[in-house]
Image 1 (spheres, one colour):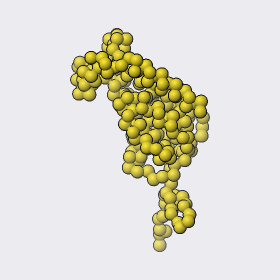
Image 2 (cartoon, one colour):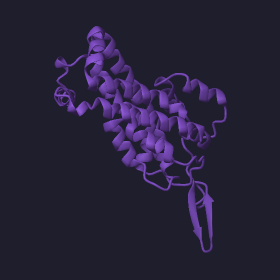
Image 3 (spheres, rainbow, N blue to C red):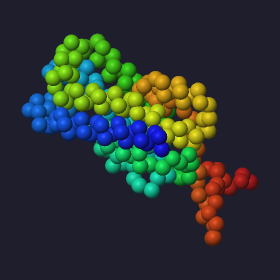
Image 4 (cartoon, rainbow, N blue to C red):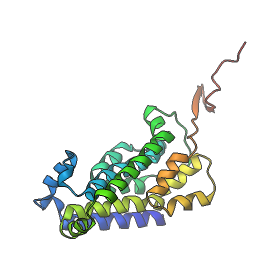
Length: 236
């Protein structure tokens, strides 16, 4: 409960702060977003470009845990995932607050879940992050970025949103539950991931064991769990 209170306070504070700054009321916000979406990179500071696209990587990191967790919840996860790609933690944190802690996985892995559970997805996100950060470091103008952070509402808010996306990961039981589903009980793994924002979670989804799949076998009056190979016929 303590974690959810912290998440709620973060969410309320950021929502109020965003409404107070009202980025959509600023005349330069929509033209800037259009340039970012249409890859007019020569007209945008590379640091801002990197942060903007990292705001697409961060929801994917959460998705690699959320969609398996969502199978065990009584509401759908995809609206929160889609919303987090547009408005970041404002849409992500409500899921983290509303979800109930559950360390089981009693479902089949559909095609999407197999992709999100794959280490290759984690590696792709890791390499994408390295590329975006390298682009920001090599091509970015830090003095200009700092000035924009102080004077342009959109730049200010998306930067804070990115930081909150990274720092929120260990504050929710979502991570604890994912570790438990995969049989990871070593607290050192938790702290190694929790204390390294962004790259800790990325490394985790690159190295974590695959999610075990339980298959339900329906018997009149009884519902059983079977192993993934229990339905195979023995060889003659």
